Image (tube, rainbow, N blue to C red; front, side):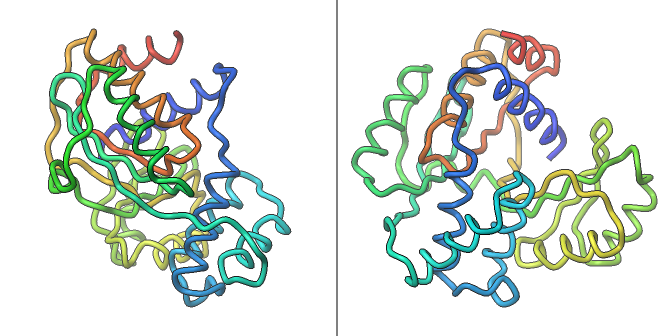
Length: 250
């Protein structure tokens, strides 16, 4: 998704400026727990757990915290049980929005998600209302200042990646979800400098938003970013980079 990295940069800059930041460690711990509960505590045989551990390492989570989260997932340690839920709805201008949460209280979370939509000129929709507008892909962001586009393109496509795009100083590699963890590991093994990686939803089409509606949408997404139960989210708006920069500096 061209522009994926732009939004990532906006999130990072807003996170540095806002007094209330989302609890990154808490979200990654939840993902590790659920992944370990789902398919076991070995990242060698559990791709989802491998990805979660890589994310934990990228945010400098201590090794013992990772190990405790895995044990909570496998039942070796007691812990909270989390439920995975996907919410779908519409933001300003009819933009499709999809939210993935992990919660220990679905009634509370549903109420809070509904309020956030309403607060920012959106509305919570029925299950399936916008999911069909997105494709799930593995995303790997490689440092374009250390590797050329041709170099990354040749290696990534040889490994089985779907596509490689250049976005500023980032080389964005996209993969099928079931190939994601394998390609990520192999790119690292070949010396690629991976700056960020995740499984994300890519919109099939985008909606161009005028500035006022774009700002409201960015506020909506920022509030979801800061919600403890929200693990991931996506929207299909096409927003001018200047507007995103203005929002980042608010």
